[in-house]
Image (cartoon, rainbow, N blue to C red; front, side, top):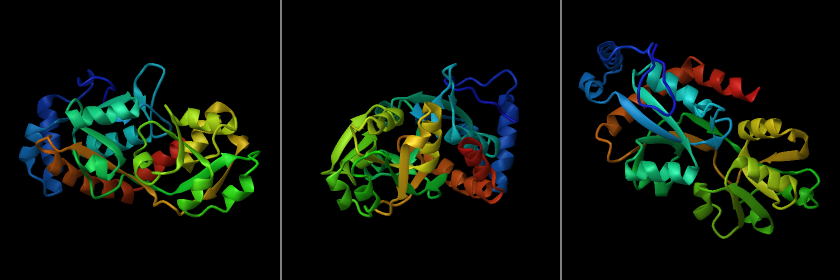
Length: 271
């Protein structure tokens, strides 16, 4: 198995040799009906992430990346596809800009129209998770928030989110939006009564509030005003073999979903 090191494009000392990696990639490509020549040319993918998007992608104390996305891509593209991955965490707006400008190759995120202008996305989602409305239990408007079912209904409240959220200029356009650098600060602002609510998914909410010690301060209700958050692999359009790698990803992610690997990774961070 190939081991990957965050923040560097160099494999660890226990990594496979280039020749062994090529042989493994050729075998994987053949079994999936993909051209083996693809992997002879492309063995590395620099993946950028939001560095503070717990539990999906976040920096550890040693500055290496960890999280659901990292573990899942290491399995799908690393172990199964023999593609060497470099994982880098940054402020989200900067992480996206680097992919756009070619300083990085890929990211795992929502396939928004703005991102589709410079990146191609996988057909298959790595994960698809429905959103909820999260608000402080002591919010004077809590009962009103519980009745919100549409985007229009959010117009009566201040909505917290993080810088770089693609929904700010799309689904959230025209709403009273409070942006802060990361999800942790979004939730702290809601707890302090400086924002009314946020649209979030349960795994993120559970881990961040547990880490902050404020899990019991919030309430949630399902929200059907937005589709589920479907996280796809996106590769910049200027990356020559991007379409072929995305086709490989689509095949491998189905296999990882079928054998429950992706489910187990998600559960390991949510418990």
